[in-house]
Image 1 (cartoon, rainbow, N blue to C red):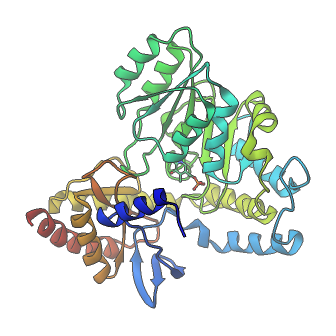
Image 2 (image 1 turned 90 degrees about the horizontal axis):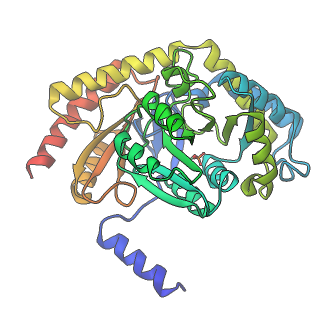
Image 3 (image 1 turned 120 degrees about the vertical axis):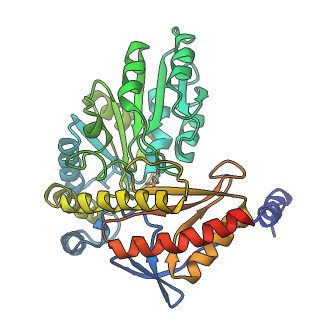
Length: 391
Ligand SMILES: *Cc1c(COP(=O)(O)O)cnc(C)c1O
């Protein structure tokens, strides 16, 4: 039984070769992933520093489960707020150098609430054209006027902001774009926002742990202060290796979120053991900078080999997301399956996640990849990519 509306959408997905299937992961170890009895070199995880597998993090998690058990038992404003969460929020705020931080159940939850809290239908929100689906949904929920500016086009943003002098404006973007792997010019963006009285929100999902000397993310990398970027959103499922999300900023911003945020208020808090394990992650980020160093060496090697093999990348910025646009869904799936046959697991990203005819392979690098892993992948990718382009 299904509505005719959903039935039709199902048929369209199949027709367009856009049907999604689950990949059932049996286990993951170092840079390997085992799926249906076969082990692949894993190039499709956002766990860029392999922190989810860190012994100290696992240990903290297990110990906290002994203390707290599984579920938190309630939403955070009833009785689901534990000491481990308070400790993690304080340490995290200190790490990203903001007054205060608030722990949300996910990046999606955080993004659904931030804009609803900051504005309403009288406001205007400007977002980069390639912003993540969770940001778009959050903007829609706020009922504010939504203005999308072309990807990275600061001149266009500035021009549009100047037409909105009487409206309270918010600008939102990502530090590293999740499907392109390119980095925003946040120095320029923060100046444009300040000059035009716009409130800047930054989704630094892929920057945390990766960008900046100490892995504090995009603000550290660009040397931006809390005045430059007043609202920071950090989903923790990427290089942080965990789950949930932090929103950080001034005391007044966090107070507003605690008071107004619907996803914070009306959803059961994450297990307290997650917060305890997350505290251990912060310690790893602080003490093991070698993980970031190795990751960056891997990224540089990947870019160099892509160049040598004539494989064009969406971006040559030094980020772990390396995207190779193939074109049609059929062609992209073709390359994907050939790489699977050679024991590489990459992700194949198709519309509507990316624009039509820009289906791509999204290759994620991590600190556990060896030089040999990357050289072997690129050798096979070069063959299949060029075959696909010729056909
Ligand atoms: C992954 C991601 C999110 C969603 O975060 P979750 O914690 O996975 O819900 C939000 N924004 C960006 C840019 C992301 O990459």
